Amino acid sequence: MTTSPDADPCKKFACKLQKCLNENIYQPSRCQEVIEELRICCRKYSNQSTVCEGINITKPYEHKTIDFRKALK
Image (tube, rainbow, N blue to C red; front, side, top):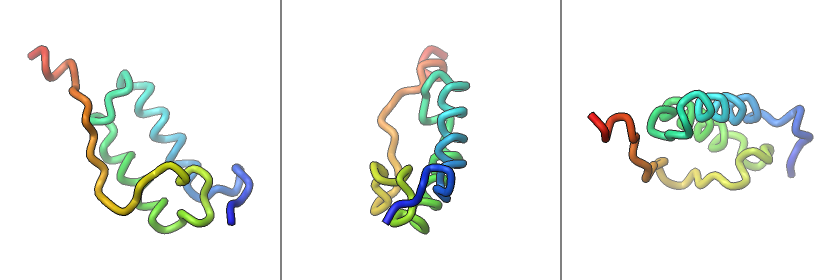
């Protein structure tokens, strides 16, 4: 059962993640803490949150992107 978007318990974490990604040129490696906060929320509220529908909570998050600023150094 899902709730309305305004009552979604994980929406604030999804918004925080979007803000982090926007501020960090969409480099997930720079948003690890925020991603983990969202995953923790989704583990707790996956059946109540539409935000969590596409998030795999069965295994740790593993990003496969390269931080281009670090790569250029």
